[in-house]
Structures are given as structure tokens and as C-alpha cells.
Image (tube, rainbow, N blue to C red; front, side):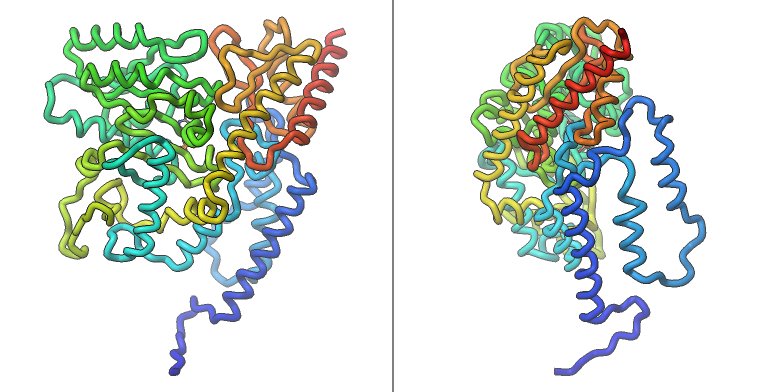
Length: 490
Ligand SMILES: *Cc1c(COP(=O)(O)O)cnc(C)c1O
């Protein structure tokens, strides 16, 4: 066989590629070993409210600032040391099993390997003809996600880098589905507990912010349906077009799930699109308890899901799922271009460029495909179930602590536990409680604000490695923190 010699200064030979990969692997293994040995804190930030106090992060960032273009090459090993050293040891650590802030994303390494393969082979996933094999694999993943969420024949979707983008695509679908109907300005309906990305999605899609109606919630933080109906009626009378109602399947604040079946009914009676924001809760539908809580989601016209949340994958793994494939195609259809191969959309081989906002992009499906194929879906179901059990366990244990109150406004459907100091009127004290717990380094929590309760401490359990040991340690830290606060007061 003839050997072609490449003279590009950018070319690496096989041995150099292997050396690159081996060195990277060694660093990754060492990093994971440190996490396993709990040598790293769940967060280098203890106080998430007053980040202006976070000098260490600012210093780390300024230490890495480089205004000059790199003029000469640097040894790979030196660069890796920088990535796994200076760049790593600051901020909040999502890969840590004690990370319980926001909505955790542990990031299965298997998923990262799938993503790595996709990028390393660098096939083009904009049109199916460019990589029919990989396209089919990505389509399989979309199909599996549809099945997991209860969608059947005729449904489809698009893998996005995040839930925010999926929500944006959903509003775009709602608007195009409505295009040829009555005149009048469009209105979108969300609850006070909806994720802020819905407002952003709507304004990005061209709606004025004030046309996004915020509906109140009941005592379980679910959208108030009477208020929704009344607001829609008022808007109709005022000449507005109700184009989209958004139900949340797992609010970021408290894990509450809207009455999706009822919202579906109301939205469809009004001829509006029903979008379910299931970024947090979506994949819990794999479990029995999740299925019960998310009842009605299969009636949604579109569903956004974050596999980087409830499927434990690395960031950048989300999807918009649409009940009727045609609606998705209508919203993102492209007119074609002479320099592209013909768009020859077939039922099972989609040109992704015709179903989403992008053209050139990597193969996305492998991030989910590899872990799902390696372990089978039951492993995910079991792990999700375990998280719900752990949330119950944590709530029960916290409830036994003196001076602490677990806020149980709703049954725990999704693994969020909310607590506060008993009788504390002062939100500063609850913020201090959160900071004290985080300062121990075992877990990272944040506070949030809930109607009726004000500032509360919030723990979201969704890292695949979070287990009883982690939770027990957290309870010890909470107990310790409550004591410190009490001693300080006396
Ligand atoms: C996280 C989240 C989003 C946003 O998703 P990203 O992937 O962070 O863009 C939207 N809605 C809900 C309910 C979420 O929890």
C-alpha cells in the first residue's frame, strides 16, 4: 500500500494521535479518582447569592486570561496540566456526586465518549445523504426519546444543545402552526413557576415580552387552570390570539408538575399549541411514579427534554420532540440551495437541516446512543427511581432535625427537597444556612424563593452517583450548620 505523506503543519501521525489520547485519558482517570476519593469539593463557591464575594474564581479566570494570539506552539502535556489544574479548580463542580444545586448534570463519561467519536470522525449531520448510517442512529435516539415520553407513530424531534433552544423551537412551531388562522397579536401562557427560558424563547421568536402571560399557581405550585381559562377569554375579547400554552413537567424551583392533561384540554379547545417543558422531569416518565406524575404529557404538541438532566448525560444533550412530524418540518423547512445535495426527505431518513435551525453540525445522537445501548433502558429507570427514593429519604431525615422545617407543599414526584429553619422569618438566616452547608464541601446546594415561604434552601438529587452516603453526609452538615447558627444567636 502506498503511504501518502501529509506536509501540513497541523497534521499528526498515528503515534502522535495515540499519545494525545493516552495523555488525555490519564488526566481524566486521575480527575475521576480525585472525585471518587472526595478530594475535591462539590463547589469552590459556598455562597451562590453574593458571588461578588467570590474572589478565588475571579483570580483563577484572570490568571488564564490571554490577550495575545498564541504565536508559537506549546507542549500538549503543559496544556492538559492547565485544563485539569488551573481551569478546573474553581467554580461549582457538576461532576461531583454532592452537586445538588439547580438541576444537576453528572455527565456519564460513556456519553462523552459517544460525543468524542462523533466529533473525531467529523461526519456531517445536516442532510441524511452525507451520513445515512449515523443519521439513522441519531434518528433511533429521537424515536427512543419519543417513546419514553409517550409519543407514538408520526412523532419526531430534533436534538439540540440545550432545553432553552428546544423551548425556542417549540414557540416557533406554535407560531407557524397558527400562521394561517385568525389575525391579532399572538399571546403565550406560562405559569409563575415556568423556567425563564420560556420568556426568552418567546421574545426570541418575536413576541413582545408583555404578550407572554404569567398565570398564578395553586398551593402545589401548579398552574392555576381557572386563571388560565379566564386570561385566555380576556385576551380573545381584547383581540389577542392565544397561540401557545406552556405546561411545566417539573419546575426548576420545586419539581412541581402542572396538570398536563387539563392544560392539554384547555389549550386544544382554544386551538392553541400545547408545549410541555419537561427539561427537568421528562425522562422520569421511565419510572412508574414519573408516569403517574406526568400523565397527559403525551397529549402535548411538543415536549422539550434535557438528557443532560434526567438522563445523566453530559451538557449539550437535549431535544425538542413534536407529536406531528409535519409541524416540525413546517417550522424549519428550508428552500434549498444549489451548493447542497438535493433534500430528499424520507419518512425514516430526515434531513435534520429541515427540522431545526442549523445546517452544519456534528452527529448528536451518539451521546445518548452509546450509554443507552451499553446499559439498556432499565438501568436508567432504576437510577431515576433511586433518586426519587433518595429525595424521600432526605426529606424524612431532615424533618427529624431540631430547628428545621421541610417544606412539603406537594408530594415529591421529582427529587427536589425544600427546607428552611423553622420559624425563620429572616431570609438572611436561611441563606446563611445554605452557605454553611456548602462551606463543608460535601454538597453544593442553592436557595430559591417560593410563594408563601420566601427564601428557602433547595436540594435537587440527580447525579447518578448520589447515594445514601452522600445524603447522610449532607444531613450531618445541615445538623452542624443549624447548631452553628443557633449558637451564634445565643
Ligand atoms: C433547565 C431547564 C430549562 C433550560 O434548559 P437548558 O438545557 O439549561 O437550556 C428549561 N426548563 C426547565 C424546567 C429546566 O429545568
